[in-house]
Image (cartoon, rainbow, N blue to C red):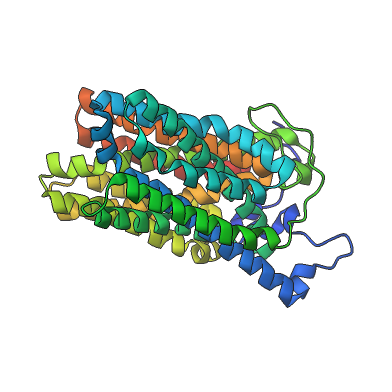
Length: 435
C-alpha cells in the first residue's frame, strides 16, 4: 500500500465531527445542504434515528429472550452439553454465512428495506426453537435464526452509517446502546416470565412484539429521506471490500487498496472486541462461582453489572466521541477493558472482580460500534458486512478458546487473553489512523 503522499490529513474519525466529513454527508454540488437548512428535513432524519434505534433495541430484546430460554429448550430436545454447543454454533454459522450476502443486498436494494426484512425474519424465527424435539432440528432452526440475526446487524449498521453521516454527529454508539438496553429488557422479561409461562409462549410473545415494532418502526424508517450516495463501484469479491460510494475511503484519495487495508484493520478491531464480549458472556458466572467462590446471586449480578456498564458506556458514547475523538476513545476504551479484565480474572475477592467486569463493560462499550461505523464510512454496506463478519468470528472463537486455555492452565489465566485482545483492539485504530 503506498504510504508516500497518499496519507490524508488527520483522519476524519479523530475529529469531533467524525463521519460528518464523509462523502455521504457532504452537501450537494450546489453547495447547499437541504437537511441542514430545512428544519423539517432535519426532523425527518431525527425520526429515522429513533426508528432505527427501535430496530436495534428489538434485535437485542429478541436475542436475549431466546438466550434466557436455552435451558428449557435444551431439556426439551434432551441434548448433552456438547450437542447443545454444536446446535448453538449454528446461530453464529448462520449469521456469518449471511452477512456478506446481506451486504450485497443492501447495495442493491438499500439498507433500510433489508433491515425491515431481516428483523421480520428474526421475529418469525424466534418462536421456532421451542417447537423442536431433536438436536438436528434445533440446529436447523438456529441456522435460520442466525441468518435473520446476522442479516439484521449488517443492514441496521449500514443504515446507521447513513444516518450518522446525514446528522453530522458521531451517534453510532447510541444505536448500539439501544441494542444493549433491549438485551437487558429481554433478559429481565424472560427471567420474570420463566416461572409462569412456557418457553413456547414466551418466545411467541417475543416474536409478536418484534413483528409489531418492525411494522411501526419500519414505516417511519422507510418514509424518512434517503441518504445521498455517489454511484457505487463494481461489487468486489467476498474478501476485503473496496471502497464504495457510500463511504469516504477509496473515493477520497482514489486508492482502493488503502480502503481495503483500513477496513481489514477495523474488522480486526471488531474481532478482538467481540472475542472479549463472547468470553465474558459465557464465562463470567462460572469464574465468579468456581474461582472467586461467589454465591449464585452474586455471580449472576456480575454479568448484569457488566451489561449495565456497557449500556451506560454506549449511552454516553456520542458525547465521549465528540469530546475525545473516536480514535482516542477506542484506545482508552481498550486499555480500560484490559485493566478491568486483569482485575476481574486475578482478583481474590468478589467485589474486586465485579469492579473489574464493570471496567470491561465500560471499556468495550464503544469500540465495536465505532469500528463498524468507520468501516461503513470507508466501504459502505460491504465494509459493514466484512467488519461485522470478522467481529462475529471473534465472538464465535472466543468462548471455545477460553475453554481450551482453561483446560490447559486455569480459567483465570485463560481470561487474561481477553486483556490481550482488548489491548490489540486499542492499538489497531491507531494504526488505521496513521494509514
